[in-house]
Structures are given as C-alpha cells and as structure tokens.
Length: 155
Image 1: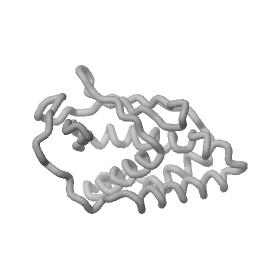
Image 2: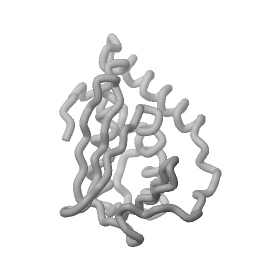
Image 3: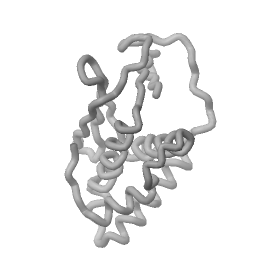
Image 4: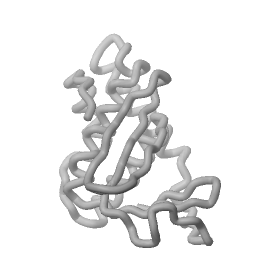
C-alpha cells in the first residue's frame, strides 16, 4: 500500500493477510459506531443507511486514475514497512484516527471520515479478491453483520 500526501510525501507499507483480516472488521465496526448510524431506530434502518453510504462513497471515488509515482519524500524510508499493529481512535466529529505501524519504530496516524473508510474497505476487498485470500465477507456483508450485532467496541 502506498499513501501520498498533498505535501509530496509518500508512505509505503506491506499489508499481510493476517493484518488485513484483523483490520477489516474494526474499520467496518467504526462505521456502525458512527452517531449517524447508531441513532437509527432499527437494525434494518442502520443496514440500509450503511449500504447507501457505502454505495455513495464507492461511486464518488476515483478508482480508475493510476497512482502517480512522481518524486516524493519518503519519511519512513524507501523500503515498505511491514504493518503489524493498528489502533482505531474515535474522534468527537464521528471520524476516526487510524494509527498503523510496524512492531517497533515509526508509523503514521490517518484521520479518516466515513467516505474514506468505505473507499479503503472497497480497495481492500478488491485486493483480497485479486490475491485470492478468501477472507470471507465483503465490506457490504461485514457492515451488515456489524450493524446487526450493535457492538461498539473498538481496538
């Protein structure tokens, strides 16, 4: 995974099957714990709103433009960092901070709104499909399962 910032910095990471398998449910759960979803009257209403938000986010994202591999600063080095840890911290505005990093050393904190979370999950699901990792549910079914469980525990 390569992340570029507006100030010409690039962060490179390796995501293992194990890491993705652990992260995906927590990202989906962060969507269901959003006050906009949590305050819906029924699990059916929560499911439908999540489904609508996912479709809207994916449809408004540009997945067709190739990543620009121009000269960028590499704060964590040229070699990708193997991600082994993450932490999700809810923010007061309904967004989350996703802290990712290696077992030791520096990582990064990403501030993500629900649209970005939906897009990241869609990209992960596509990569999982291409890699043939067979991790089971897609983001759509993961969100629905999380909404039905009504659990709000985060890592």
